[in-house]
Image (tube, rainbow, N blue to C red; front, side, top):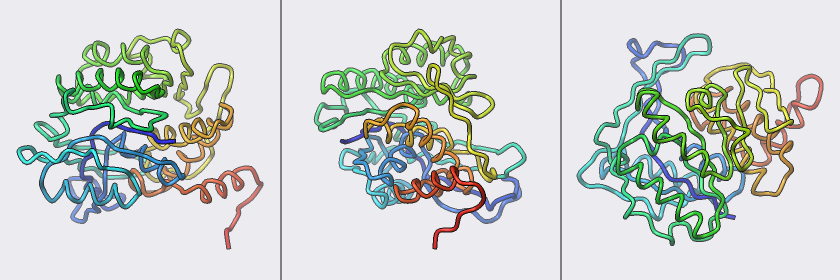
Length: 304
């Protein structure tokens, strides 16, 4: 049961915890990218995950590819562009103040994604295709490629999972409404923040498939179902939404009822926010099961 994701993957340079970006002198190297984060989460939970995207023929691109492959992600369809750089994300992390995120992605290889690069064989065996609103906002050609991806998913009979993942540094609200809002109506599964739906002017009740709404109080709802966030210490909130998506899609792929999908999504997100970095806290299946058991029991649990 393969999951195919398509989008941007960047080299992440993460400042030492608690130090403002402008004062940081030590950085950790990792991978950033909404879709690649979801692929990593699903791969660790035992699913076949394939990443489609573009990277530069540079050290950053080689590093990103190596880290994706180390998680068991299928990168056979990755395009290496000799004429454009790999995108770079530099940020700090702090549990109780605003996090400073700086993107260096203009003219990147990822922004050159084009519809003619996508073919049906890239989705071979796909049961779910996941993409976010970041991809169509990267460029006009990436927008057209996203539309092509939706069409290809329909052709191969895969479900389309879509997360708006709004980043206003990529465009003004009206641009997001123009490009991204129509895609929610074409998706089979929507995972969106309450504030994102309001900005896009989309009523989740009007969407055709299951629409998970991540509420401002950190709970999540799907129709009448509601899942509260697990009470855990917050270390780094970045990556929580992608972790939630990975947990939900994992349950969906295994045929679990929506209440289990929501519970596992909340648990994966709770594990990620306790670690610095987008993907460092993503669990394997055994780790997720232990966490769920721990959340259900009173008091602390220790795995010995």
